[in-house]
Length: 628
Image 1 (cartoon, helix red, strand yellow):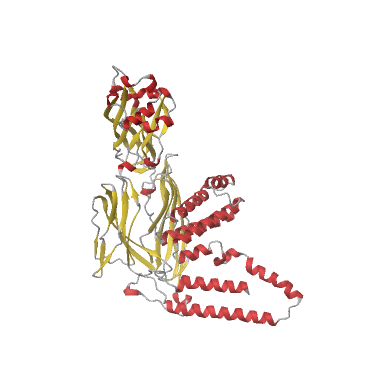
Image 2: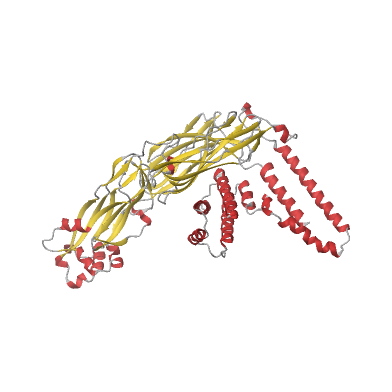
């Protein structure tokens, strides 16, 4: 009886969650403003998005003032559709890329849209721009000299002796090195450029010009403020090194491209020969610090202001070959694969299905656009929603892009969506490759065959909208089903009490209940490992969803690898997966999912489309590892 009651309760909860209880804000017009970063460094770009949900007839859009910001790009208007529990929801968005001009706290407010002669305001956007003092634009060698440079001979470079050329001494002991991971590459093939300041002097240094890197798409790999200065040998001598910039570059065109120089302004402090007795040389680090505090006699200190500029570095970029270039090629360079799936293969005429096309691998993801699909006749398809998860600190970038197309058949019949083609250039083999997904079939059936208890309604005379089911009749139907199950359970319990409790019956009771509880549990979706995550997805509980999903993924992977629950280091898990012979795609999916869950737990914004994509990917991963 407990088992029957449990399944009745789970059925009722899921039915009301999926079909009866409408999601918060469903169908309501909302104006939401968001930004991709809350804290940025000086000169960094920010993407600001103003999205209007459940409405496309926007009469007017008024942006905020963008005070003390330069608009790099925008407004970029986009529109699309997304599906939440059946109905098709539409949106219009306006995107800006801006660059704040000074440090401090920013608030962008006052944006609104005009819809049906009514003003709808956007929420304010807040972010912080760090002061240049908070970044790694300033370097003080003397603060690290006594801690990191143990060679006493190094301190002799802080001393200026009679007749010594100060400018020559600075050039030999203070300079910027530029390094590139490749001197030759193809268009779109990534390379790493690193700018590093080398110093053996006591200098207060500040970056005055960062390299602009014209001709490349640029992605900063690390914030210099988070990198601790280190010590390196160069030409047989020890130097303190300070990271100025480390970037991943994607060449935009062929030819000889220059990595622009960086400039650093330095205030170099020396001790004159008259003040550098043997006894004082032993205490040079302390003397330098006391000199900075103006406790050292100014007659024994010499300061020079000097600007250090790096030498330009050139990279030869080879053009992509014209021969054998596929017609579908759109600039992707790297190593990719493509998959296609649909959320349901059978739909009623006029209802919507969602076709998802996933492109995953490594390379220049930012040039990848929605692939061209040859849609069958009498099938309407809308502009896709795009969801991505890309590890931009990897070289080359790794991850995936998912394009979700809303598909609506207009008549009864079977429709076949041909394989989707995606082509790219592989720099490892210096050749083009073409990947194809599997073909997808959709069976459109008559609405009358599926249900005789309700009829479709079309809002506002828009025939492209799928029918919306009346929640009242769904509530009635749910109540009837729940009552039927309740009385069936009561009837079974009553009959069991009336039956004589013979030893055979008592002995077989547990045997009868075991198959019902445990036989093929994966076939009952509400009793599977992702039941709680699915329920939280429906309830739009983002924090609970990602927390539960992460817990299930770790648990299932540890069970598969036969590890204890204490083994929670991702690097150990990845290594064990490789030892077990798991393929790279499975390993990458697991990495991306765990990273997505970890990041989302610290992000208060709930993105339903992204949550659904993550859930689908997790479902695919669990199914994949269960077969291996």
